[in-house]
Image (cartoon, rainbow, N blue to C red):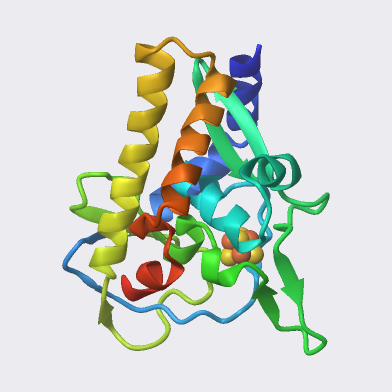
Length: 215
Ligand code: SF4
């Protein structure tokens, strides 16, 4: 039933989606790019489209001084496709991220900025190819093409690839190999990551993440 729902949603916007994927700018990992954030907030207003790993969830929950369960309840939409749970940041009724705030001047800001998800950290660079050889630039961002020509943040990209792989490796271990139900498996992996963070794992250190570079 859930699978059908996902299929219908994608099918309804297929033309628009195909047009978007055709316009993505493909870059080799050694290519240079131009981007300067215009603080328009558009990338944070397009619906619940930021996918999260367990590492993102643990970092954000710790930043907000709440438990990972509380963070899941308040800010995350969990979708189970077949047996794999996927986590997305929830948006408000207008599709804006719940962490997006606006100053009196109209300037937008992220209230969880130091602990923002890796996908937000990397945007408008999209890392879908986990070989690490190429990335895409989202042409819908008004900041693409602005600023000085510079290299991609390779260390940040490599770290994100590690987190994505590790996230799914852990989920497969508990769900496929150990037979946990999807939600139970997700909870176990989150609990494991939470303990690692408490014990001082490098990935949980926000200064370490900031040292990996930025877009
Ligand atoms: S977490 Fe921050 S950067 Fe990411 S979508 Fe929300 S407001 Fe934007």
